[in-house]
Image 1: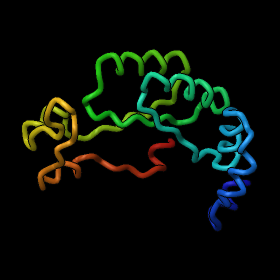
Image 2: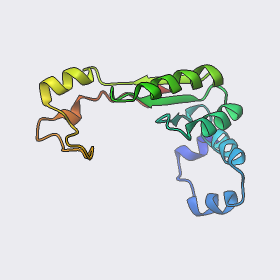
Image 3: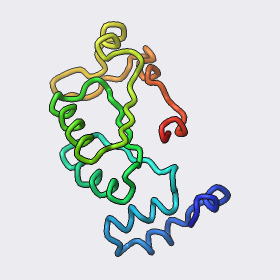
Length: 142
């Protein structure tokens, strides 16, 4: 289904799910590429299993934009893994982050995450969550 037809109507997800129920992962990625064309992007947190999907997606769509939201709190090993995958798969990586560094956010608004359990404490009414800059999807896929 070409993208133009999606602009004026919604996907019939029941039909799509039925059509793709027995499809392998590569066929599903190919379907998404055909349906969404150049507006298709993927996101990744670059966790341990990310390499598999990134490899598969870039085999089908070598230039697919891969979006990473860098919170400033990733482990050093995660940043290293990102760079390894960027080089290995020639990723079209788009990194988005707040204008304010994590260190400055904590100094001004306090820590978002408190306690040994790592559970979010919320923003306490400070508006901390509003710091992240949202960008138009067209900017992301350039």
